[in-house]
Picture 1 (cartoon, one colour):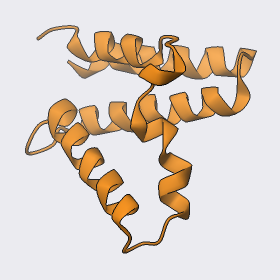
Picture 2: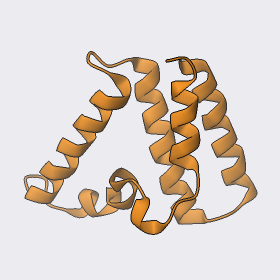
Picture 3: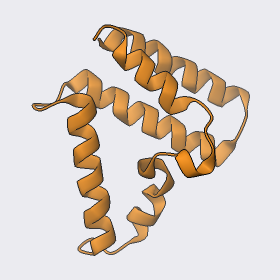
Length: 102
């Protein structure tokens, strides 16, 4: 689908109520602090694997993997920094990359 990657990036980066945020961003630090062999980390990794397959396909598209990493990273940074000019630049760069993925 032409434009699908850009639409995904726009949706992912758009403001949403806190109960509609992606678990990859919301739970990233909890997963990082959890035991490596623990159930929480295993569930997080399983969710990530499903998200990768959904977005990047199988075998994974390198450009779609990059987009996934960029939108998740930008979302985590947005949560940490709030509204600031730098975040506007970062999100604009991610959206511009999204235009080139399909």
